[in-house]
Image (tube, rainbow over all chains, first blue to last red; front, side, top):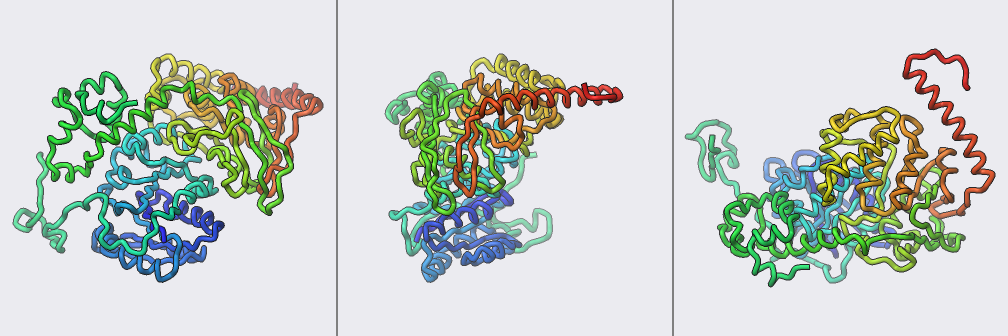
Amino acid sequence: MNLITFSGPPSSGKTSVILKTIQALRQQDLKVGVVKFDCLYTEDDVLYEKAQVPVKKGLSGGLCPDHYFVSNIEEVVEWGVKNTLDVLITESAGLCNRCSPYIKEIKAICVIDNLSGVNTPKKIGPLLKSADIVVITKGDIVSQAEREVFASRISAVNAQAIVMHVNGLTGQGAYELSTLMVEDEKQINTVKGMELRFSMPSALCSYCLGEKRIGDEYQMGNVRKMTM
Amino acid sequence: MITKEQLQKLSIQEVLTRYPFVLTYLENNKIKVEGYESLTFHEFRNQFEEHELEEWAMDLSKLEEELIVFISQMLEFLGETENSVDSLTILPGQDKSGNPETFEMLTIRKSEIIAIVGPTGSGKSRLLADIEWTAQHDTPTKRGILINGVTPDKKWRFSSSNKLVAQLSQNMNFVIDLSVGEFIELHAKSRLVEQEEEVVSRIVDAANYLAGEKFDLNTPVTALSGGQSRALMIADTAILSKSPIVLIDEIENAGIDRKKALKLLVGEEKIVLIATHDPTLALMADKRMVIKNGGILKILETSKEEKEVLITLEEMDTKIQALRSSLRAGEVIKNIE
């Protein structure tokens, strides 16, 4: 089985890109399943079900979504193996721009959209910088100039990535993306023992543990102050 | 090209002098080298404790490797001569039902205009994707694409700065909040253009030549009218974009001189593909491709009779444009001249 991690800011078009890519993978007689990670709410699983794609969803609720992702990824892989998938896709939103759920040796795809503004590539951390493939969406609604500026800014922060344009509505580019997803030498049955590409942000302060009151005396653990 | 050994010997200052564009790389990655210019990148990297890097989510372990990739990409981008595309050839494949396409091969040369016609969903996006991906009988249509008559270099598939196709479509907008001048300058910077000012004024002049209503460098791009926006997009794509092929998805017949627009693109030695059902535009093309059920059904050469029809159409267009101007000027319409 090939495991692929898809990530990207909320509403960047991940689900549309994945759905179009799955269509292309299926034409090659491959069985594809998706596990969708989100924070509080998602209905994307319904979209996958409608397309008859085996799907599971996980809502992290009060936990950091990416911490939740790593704690569950092994079980997710087991589910994929049990369902005899050829390709297992995980989809998760990068909510704080600092996190990244990418695993070494597992293909990492970041989806980012042209509408998010030309300075966005600077603002996103490992989610964008350590991806193998960067997919740019919504290219059909911005000018050619903005598309070019945006793509060049992405290459400036992640020179090694393959940068592709995919149209989530027409599917233009999705077939091409699908050809980069299946690799015999990257087949896996487990991710046990593998490592994340980048550490997740350290957080353990009283607020992580449910504190609500404001004020110095309530702050414990990993606390840092701004210079005012 | 630069090797790892070479990079290790150069100080940051020397690297910046030799490759000024590295500054963009550092800026975009928020790497501040002020005060460290005399060090090499290797020494610079070792200045930092691991927890400091983690704090700002930076991974400098690959700094040198990434820089080498970035520098070679930029050098390749700057040395444009080897990227010139004189012709594009489409080799037949099959339609959605697997029927073979019947044309022999289609070669489109620089400065040629090809119209693409066919209903929505007939496979125009797929055709364009084949061209962009330089398909080698490895896409669902099984078409082949040749550049300059030969199987193209794989770089066209994966290079983000050397895209084969630039696209202009009907529902495109400027989303950035800048003035026209600042906007073109931003684009020019990303293309590493040297005479920025000259290019900026050339583009604005060209856009104004195409647009019905004039605008200047200080106009915010979001305040441009539909016609002005399209004029600016076309002028900017013609002059600044390096993509040798331009695909246009319809040009609305309002606020822009479409004939001049096509001439501008062709004058900049682009290959122009235009998806349209507008008779004037379709007949301006040298040939037109008819798409049906995912396949190229036939390729028609614009005939002599059709070119004559075009003259009549253009006369009609001129009359409509004149009426538009009269209305704009507050005049009362009495008859069509």
